[in-house]
Image (cartoon, rainbow, N blue to C red; front, top):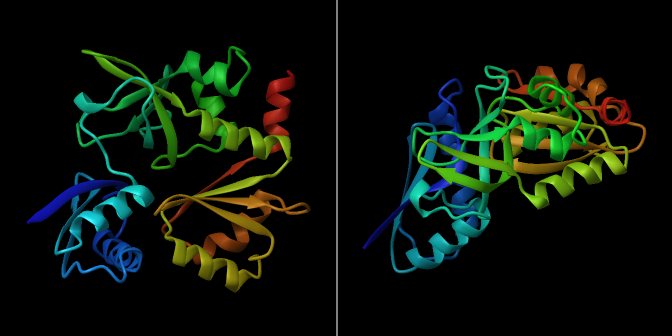
Length: 251
């Protein structure tokens, strides 16, 4: 018997998909090391990563990968309150919120502006683009979402309580954050070793190609960009500036 499923990981077509898929494949092999799964294949479907495996331990392997990466569900299977990973798409092209890819369906989910204001700006009447810029949100960034509404004409999400708590924790501790999208865990580790900044940040994995470098006291995220950026030429970097967020919330 063969099992095939799509995990909550995306590799955009703008990046070297085959090379990155191979690196992800080695990582997956490490995750299921010791299990009897002789056949493992990875493919990309509209940016999503499909895993196909077979062998005596295929069920155990699927459960392990589901726990670590998550599996995407059909929109029909999602229920209000479900949480899952979503990837920002077309950021800044609309003014009424942010769209996320959450499933293999071509229908994207909307994080509406009124919900963004409530969760991220204390209800202040600020544009979606400004909120996104101050928080450092960028295309293809992975965030944990919660399904809040589902209708015939649309799917609506918000940041999950856990994701919101993480963002609030960074702000409360006055920790700048450098977001990196388009680089693998191995690429980020190498960049930090080469620049000598390994001890200056804590790396938080949001997805295989989406990470947050949480700065320790005395380190500014914007100061890391010219140091780390040259070692990650395919990646996009952005900053969550606690100073700017506190200024936004206190206006």
